Image 1 (tube, rainbow, N blue to C red):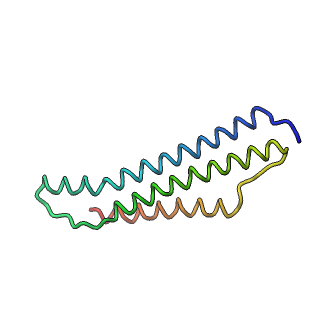
Image 2 (image 1 turned 45 degrees about the vertical axis):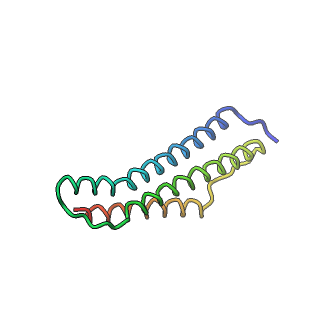
Length: 121
C-alpha cells in the first residue's frame, strides 16, 4: 500500500464535484424543458392561439432529470473506486463501456434537442 498524495486525493474530489455539477445541470435543464410546455400553453392563451398538446416536453424533461440522477450515482461510484485505487497505489481508469455509454447519452440528448428545435417553429 502506498501513501496517497494530497494532490491525487484532491483531484479525485474535484472530479467528483464535476460529476455533481453536471448532474445538477442535467436535472435543472430537465426541469426547464418539462416546464416549457406550460410556458407555451400560457403564451398561446395570451396570444389567442391553439397549441396542440404533445407531452414531449414533459417526457424529455423527465428523461433529462433521470440522466442527471444517473450521472450523480455514477460520479459517486467513480469517486469511491478511484479513492480505493489511490489507497492501493494503483490506477483505475474509466472503462471503455462507460465512456461509450456516456458519450452516446450526450449525443442522443443533443440529437433530440437539435431535431426538436425546428419542430417548435
